[in-house]
Image 1 (cartoon, one colour):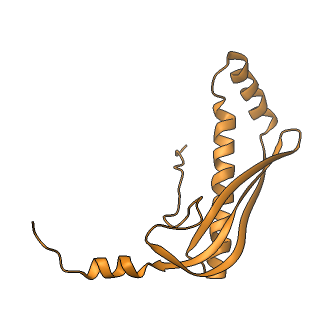
Image 2 (image 1 turned 30 degrees about the horizontal axis):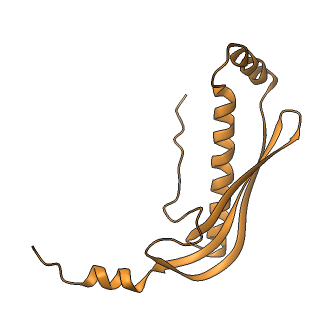
Length: 129
């Protein structure tokens, strides 16, 4: 089984601005939502891990996959609107039934461009000291 690596997007932030970028337009709130559950066999294996204590890796992996999928859905919705960045990114999770969890990832979709000061600085001649 191939290990899955967590991914991110360079123009996402939990803040409400991106350093060296200015917001040109805003498209509003975008979100990704995933509802997941662990199988009966998975719950049994996790209960064995819980019996011995420590990190319950089966649940950790489930949570990480759910967060990543919700994040990817949010980015896809932002791209459909024409955004190239998402600011104010947040996660929320709720148990909606025994062993069933909802993971929500949301933020504000925006179109950003490099700030003018940053653009000018990159065009300035470099001097050797």
